[in-house]
Image (cartoon, rainbow, N blue to C red; front, side, top):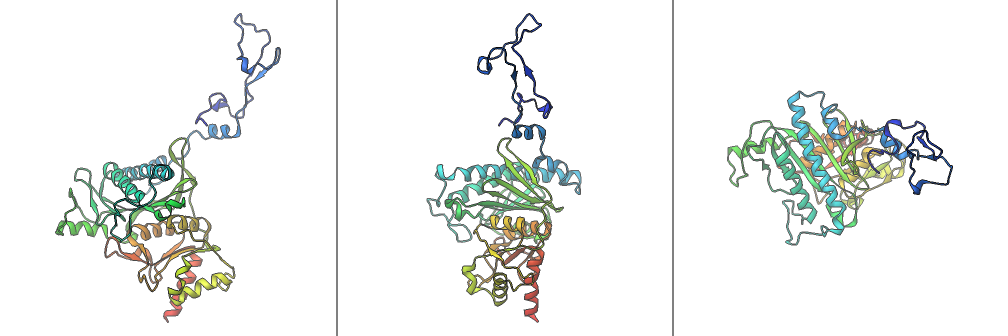
Length: 409
């Protein structure tokens, strides 16, 4: 559908349609009606009224795009310089997400499914899929060259933080998981990009990452290893039946959906608030025998309705963090990837998975915890540090925390 429907007359939506006639005209020049539209001699022709879809487009010629949002409402609490910096960073992130969304949607027909032919292994010890590597490159290049005052980039797919070229570097740090849930890509299951933006705590300018750890490198690492409470923005972009970006800049959570007709993210879910309690829990129950007794007891209470709400919960687990957290944000309940006997610190990475998602969930009114402490208070000891994670509706997560507290007495 064209963005503007000239034949319907956007400025006249709801007005009576223009009418033509084959009757004798006062003008010496006759009115010519195309043969294809000439029903019969002497019948008046009526221009088609705009359809409901056309009326919607005409009535909303100027939607609230992500770009407009950042130019206006998103950063009213920031000064002009920081507004411009964050606006530039988000422009780079949304451009990268559009490109990744296109790559994901065409992965099956462009031979981008499966693993790297070289058998590449990332720093996590995980075999990299083709789209893992490509998505990481897309984000790096977008942030490196269009990131405004960006100084450092840290990614799941990089062994160490990458320092942006000196001429383009500055006061912000971007951390990201370029393609969360990529193990599901061959099955066509929802995937996503997780990102967070920190402000640097100290100056750091360098052209390349050096193998030797000198004082300059240590300073840069200190800038990266910040608790989630220092985030200035975070969010995720989900690639599914639609491409949706959900983000926060510290004043609530907003949801934008990519409109492929105009190529822009449009505000579709303003001021998202997570329900105070849900009816869904999302956790890999195959690991249940290895959980601690408190978590096992709590999940059992959700199944049989013996929890404080008296409700019986349903289990929903996709195995893609972005998709599972998104559903939890929309419908309430909780998402968990807890510690177990095999993974004492869980499996999710603090810096670029747990902290950005926890910041967003808290901004939506939820709670995020490791089971022992608030996720946003954990200071990373390494770039790829893992922590247990439970996040979701405040009443659901608080009930679990109360059980942990009672067990500690």
